[in-house]
Length: 350
Figure (tube, rainbow, N blue to C red):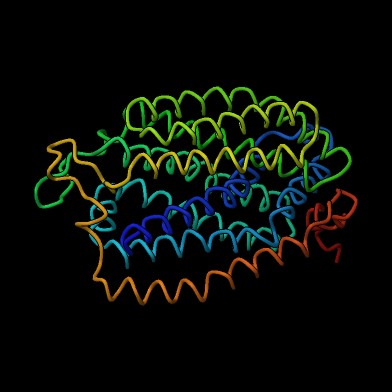
């Protein structure tokens, strides 16, 4: 394996880790914007339940975003041509994703800074927007990368925004949206107890079958149109994981269901990158204009230095992240949320 091919695999692995780990963060963020059954008659309890949702990802969400940062940095350093063309082609979608992630970070960090229910509801909206938008647009972007774009001989994108809104890309967006939402619901069921756990399980059951159907349609379309012979194995693994997710969710075995959603999301990511190789951005204008691993990679020396750095630091990052998940492995309940969190500010009588 050449260093160019190795770094394509490493970047694919980084984005796969990002989708698997940040996927349930997005799912939890989207769940925070959905109506709560206690909104009408007990808004304080409803607010505590949303706080509990946020607490399930509180210790890990920012660490999960590290995979996007390192993946983007590795893409820039290892394949500068791929990075440049992709960011120019997807300028608006990636800009919207960036804005969404910034709003989400601010909303999460500032949600508890003002003791007012309305303030927290607006922060929940920010968390939701920063979750719904990336959940859809990541699927749209990567589906377009695999499908191919109008790229000229200078490796410049010659299409417009509406070139990106094709049926295959929209199906990719629907796949990531539903997969992350289901992933988040299963994660909440795994991390909570009592009524919250029951409600999350019910929501996951309602989402499981539609998610499996949409993901199956996307995987089959990808395999038939862009796949290789060996990627049929990836389709099979992802299909088994999707079926297992449905069965485990209905059986209320959230541990197995979460494992299955992780495998299914990883399968979709591997399918995209595996079908793409050895191209990194196929050209629909002329095959000769396609960006490949070979014609977009950095120098051999750059890749050698990056390989040594990745070999030293990656085990440290993985070890630290695994330790964080182990420390915060226990279930949470509404009873652990202080009542003052949900109370509006009281005006002074003086």
